[in-house]
Length: 54
Image (cartoon, rainbow, N blue to C red; front, side, top):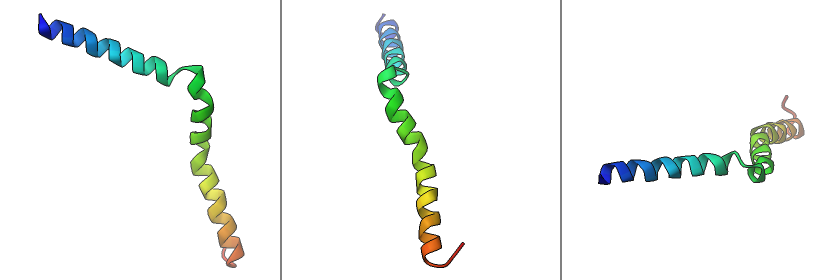
């Protein structure tokens, strides 16, 4: 009985986390975070050009 309740609670928790992660409120933050690697590449290129490297 306790195992069944535990599984149901974990499933509810899982679906709550999925719903939170995919909510529209998180979309702006995810877009910003997805661009971080690209921004880092541009900063690295700019520093290389300033030092005379390509």
